[in-house]
Image (tube, rainbow, N blue to C red; front, side, top):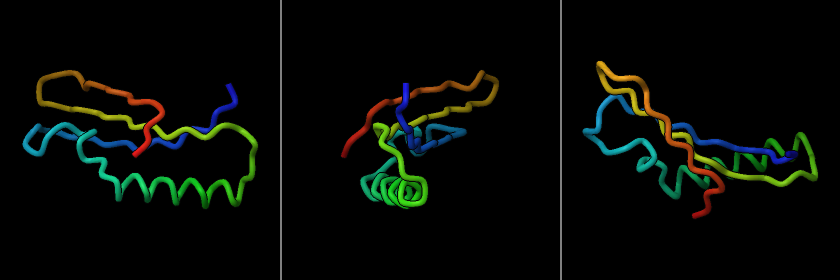
Length: 74
């Protein structure tokens, strides 16, 4: 629909350190926004920009679980 998505992808193979999406800190989100700004500086567009998180949980003996969080702001 004309929206440019910047997606932080986090994967975990165990829950020892929590769910993957819990690892997206403000600092990591700020890095994503800076990368997006650099990309848009080189590739200007007038489209809406959206930041998302894709969490992938890959536990042994199970199918991967995907959790998509749209339009994230800190």
